[in-house]
Image (tube, rainbow, N blue to C red; front, side, top):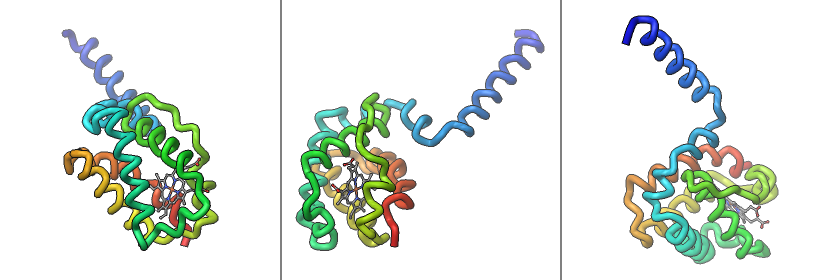
Length: 149
Ligand code: HEM
């Protein structure tokens, strides 16, 4: 490769990096389907979400927040969301996180309880600690949209 080619390649690469930095986080994470694969695809995501919702409903710290909630819808939207975030190509058709949670007056303690319940569900479904952490890292930024007090 001559010097001109090399500098063209470098310019292309730096443009890609600039694009990556400017893209919203969600668009970047959607591009990587390896997490979806490592989670075990839709069958494992579906079972994990079912166990996750059951764990939250059995959790005295947060179960009261689900009184009157449409649990079937909640499960469906969580499956879509985890599939989308992990790069599985699903579309999330639920409401925006901020809108859904603002009336619930959730605390950081509520959020931490939810994370523990999700970890329990992922353990139960044989998802490795490394893969769990990759999903949790994608959910962490949502703390600011769900916790309002
Ligand atoms: C990363 C954090 C969270 C994520 C990704 C998440 C995700 C979701 C999704 C996808 C829905 C369904 C939206 C829809 O129906 O359109 C939902 C609803 C709900 N979430 Fe969360 N959530 C989070 C944090 C929490 C926390 C910390 C709690 C309470 C401890 C909670 C309690 C609820 C309840 C009660 C509903 C049902 C609301 C209703 O049906 O009116 N969420 N959440």
